[in-house]
Image (cartoon, rainbow, N blue to C red; front, side):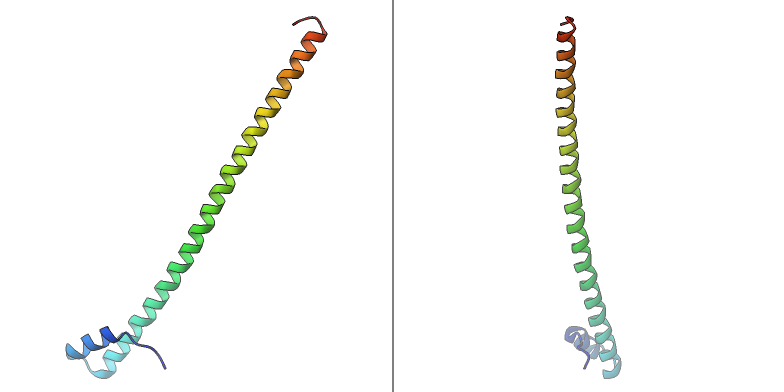
Length: 89
């Protein structure tokens, strides 16, 4: 048995629609409401995934910048050591 939106059904009956047409319209409204709720759930899941990806990208960028910083410091120290070994610094 298909569920109907009772408010829509009653409003259509009171407005003069036949019982058959009121029931069909109320069933259609209920089906669309369910479909929209499903779409909303899917959009919420997508939004959650996008937020996770955003944080992963921020974390990856942070690690990459930190890595470049460490690498830069190592190269600076190496340059200083080479300059000192050759009596340049």
